[in-house]
Length: 348
Image 1 (cartoon, rainbow, N blue to C red):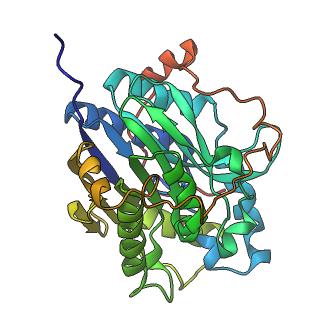
Image 2: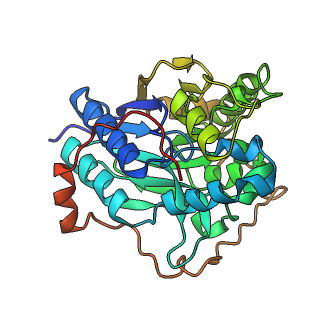
């Protein structure tokens, strides 16, 4: 008689900065972390918001008319899904046996329109699907379009039922409820370095902490929250591409793993030190929490409260993209590409 499958997983939030605006070097850095995770026995990695090619902090720091060149460069540095850069990551996941939720700026095929997206990849390299941020926040609307309900999904992974949201999308309670209704078990939260922005220095980490604990408890899920610090590569790129600014500083980022009953299992970790914020989780713990509160079951009260989600395709590619998608055979060549990122900023 075979033993029941293990309910324990080792998960990690990637607390790191990209090689800012260098897509290939940043994908190399992603591959490096996936390989490290494989050596350390980590099952799932969660990356920060738009780790590839980096969060466009200049949108908060300069007048819109001064951003045109930087915004054009950002669309060029964004990636298509599926595409060659994602295939490199899929190949690394397959070789290392590590699942990954990767934050990217996703460019809509055949256009210059981009989305703030999370890409979900299985430990065998299968591309499970993509979530596109429903509502870009504030100045983010300059660079990203709105996502639709077709990508508001929880994916049935071998590691558990995994879904995610980006940044202040967590304030959209009905978006969170949609993930709850789909039976989410592990939540991948992606964030930029909010505390580096003028006016957010003392409040950003408090806000993130509150939102992450709220979702952990109200959804009865394990939350893996990854935030990227702002490093000198980012600051130097902005100054060389757009000019001097005083609204974004170095540091920041907030990364942690949180139990459904709100204990920290790892972190929170902040600042410039890059690391994998790692913890062991046990999906069986969810059953004990749901004795008290089950937001998909006895705490739902469906005869009183209801949720409606429009899952019709919003953009032209959403009707024909087929998930899950296995790695393309040609991606095997990606393992021979360099993974060490070059130093210093790039100009657009």
